Length: 154
Ligand SMILES: Cc1cc2nc3c(=O)[nH]c(=O)nc-3n(C[C@H](O)[C@H](O)[C@H](O)COP(=O)(O)O)c2cc1C
Image 1 (tube, rainbow, N blue to C red):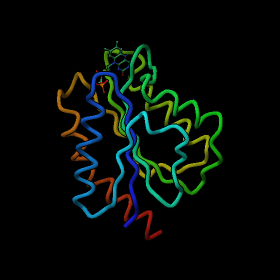
Image 2: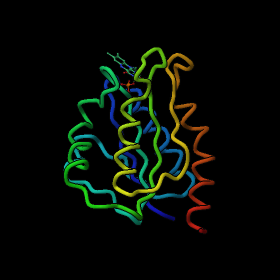
Image 3: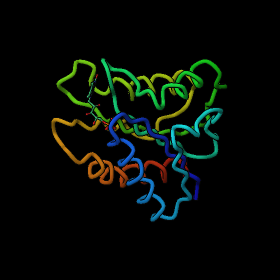
Image 4: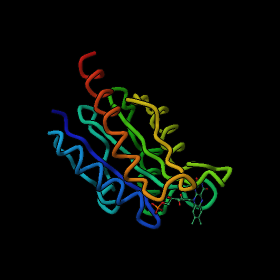
């Protein structure tokens, strides 16, 4: 089974807890996993034969949290074209902001610019709807796994 890299960006810890929860659940399915701490990300270019999941909250007005912003900028300015990379995104936000889930949308645009392929629709989790984003993220894993199987068979 493919290796899954899970990356998160957070201000208050919910995206971190969500990332930890899904990493454990995905490991239980038999995938080998690596949960990257934001301070480990310098120089990390996702391997194209591995899978990437980014879990990121939004701060400010649609902004990327400070812990993951350096990696975002590094990829934006230095990453090679990554046409074989398969990525999946989970955003945490609050729909009372006009800039709902703005940070993960910036990641989506960046990976699209790099030529990477989204495995399935982005999951945008709304703090107005749930206090437990990790539960929504856990239920998302079934569709993620289906998308992985279809992509690998294709
Ligand atoms: C100061 C501040 C600014 C925020 N700005 C946005 C925003 O622009 N868009 C959005 O969707 N959510 C915004 N949020 C909501 C957070 O993204 C949401 O509460 C999220 O669950 C926090 O996750 P975290 O604990 O991983 O940081 C903001 C929250 C705070 C406290």
